[in-house]
Image (cartoon, rainbow, N blue to C red; front, top):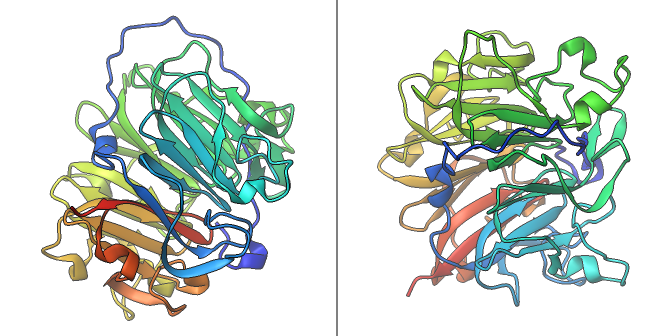
Length: 424
């Protein structure tokens, strides 16, 4: 995802057409437990960073915040996602609230009234939502019925792709009719969906291999098939002899991660130019490959920025790998790029429950409700009150956090969103 404000434009889009319906089957894979390690009770939303298009939800007059600020009139939230230039929230009653830039439909609602995009507003969906995700210029929601809806647009190196072959979708569109989905994950411009049968489906931009099902020669809109094979959700296939089923998925900005069910092995695909997938070769991976670097640990959450990855294991320990610049790894100012998951010394003795990556920033939430941040300080996205880069995890202190217990953090293009509850 772009770093400078002037460069922050939406990334590749994915189309939301539909894959052939499959016969409904009994659920064999439950929603991953890592999802329940986030918000176990409703809380409030705090935001900081750049807010020039309303992504902070603080009104037209507040264009930036360098420390966490409480979003007014937004309570009973159980999930929050910061997109490229917008924010998506999920209420305890299963409703979706959005605010920020709506140029390409990322808010999923009518914002024709002047200033309405800067105020939290409800997205109309046909049922109760249990998970939300956000990319650079798209958003998605998983309903308790197993249906997935998305809206907005994907982008690639040539510009806007649209969400479907019809173009930008400004209201929610069902993505996989006939398929029961248990989890979704959004990259900058791609969407990954995990079915109840343990199968993977993807759509969106595939230029870096993040779809895991499109060969390099067919991964851009100039190929013979056009964009339909990118934007129409399709299954990620394996050799017939490999009866691979997955139990969890995550997405980085330009890559994807999937946790195999039987042995917990991590399969990866997408951009690997700084070994952020834990693979020795720095080539883009256009089909799933098992990452040996992730072997030997039980991973509960993985996230990826532009060129780095953070992984949280079942013991609450965070590991980093990928590019070192701006301090995004948290391994110190004099560290080298990390080719394998590397434990972050500054967090030794601190049990973490949630991690998040932005373009060149990183965050962690401890089991005691503390927020740690490191990486590029531009735009005030770290919440330190300054714009200096931070090379090791720094405990974020502010008046708004003194009485609050942080439960979840999400990093967007130039802003950050927190979910927190009152300590009492």
